[in-house]
Length: 385
Image 1 (cartoon, helix red, strand yellow):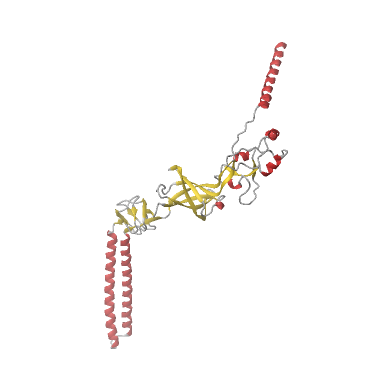
Image 2 (tube, helix red, strand yellow):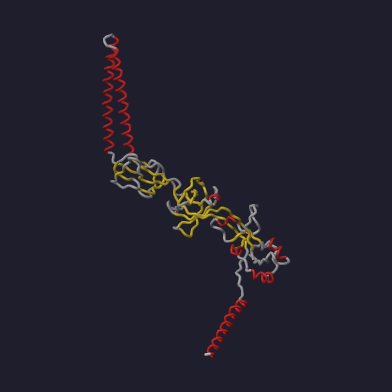
């Protein structure tokens, strides 16, 4: 029993020694591998990403002001129409009958006026000869005026019925393309409270507009005239361009999220873009060309404290400037606590400015060196190792 316990203790000690040797020995001998990249020159962008919907620059809903049955259609989807062109015809039977009825009312009112005029003339002649009383003349005058008013009323009603008959023929108000037809022959349309929409016509699909929803946190950076690029699902590998035309002041609140509509002018000469397409929009807020760039990952990396001494001893002295030829010379800056020229390099050339507004969507993969271009100081600095 004692012998078995002795060998168990020996085995446990051996296991502890092997584990300790493996842990501390492998950690001491492990080599740290750093990923490096080249410093180059190029373009950096600060942009805002949003979504939007394409639409024609001008879209008109063509409706009807009178009720009736669609008798004929002269335009269909994708039809190219001119201003004043015939689009549809409602059945005019009841409208024409109404015109005839109003015409009969006018004729009856005219007859009453003629009779009242004869009565007035006769009463006036008798009154001049002293054969009629003043009350008779006044009554004849009143009857004539009343019948004249009734005639005008009947004429106005007839004019309205004629206008309604004209409205039974639907014409195009603008030149363009029919993008929607909502009725068929034989369908009854009722224009009681609001005019039903028969057609939608886009005046020119070669010039479109993109309505993008920009978050309230980013809307302050959007200005009229800024360059915009966007993509649609129909052409995922093609970039389309546009420019900001208008920033609308009316807020849109959806589930406690406030956005603002930004209208973007888009040229569509080849008619690839269609109304209703959803676009992923990138608004270019700021741009710098031909600047020294380093990857953002380089600004986010800081070596552990246990490695600072080895970095200071092994790193070469920093160059005075990055390679101005744009060949992307690699630099290894010393920590600012190092001796000799290391501190000067860290303070002079070793700090690279990271744009504080690049977090608002679409940030560039690299940032520029050498301080702010706008002249404003930023507290958001990173150190390149």
